[in-house]
Length: 115
Image (cartoon, rainbow, N blue to C red; front, side, top):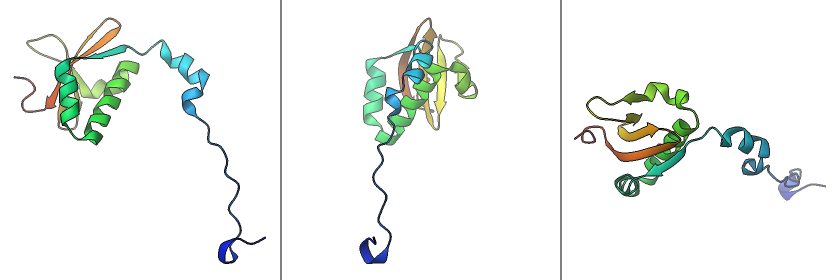
């Protein structure tokens, strides 16, 4: 049987696999990820920036919470104050990484975040 304009018909739609339901993935990584908490200033900064940039920053924070070694070249300890900074392009994320909770203190452009 031929489809539209003599082309072969499209194959039947195949249901895609939902990775969020993969229990092996959830069990293997759920115990290693730190809990993330955002301050009001950090949430306000994420809401004011472009959505694509905010999504990228959130993904980088989650990657750091899952495995700090994966973001090792983008994370440095701060001098003169407690905490670490995560570099995401021209944006900086100030975080406090102590214990099982990763506290995101502030997010801003690289020039004015350290004031």
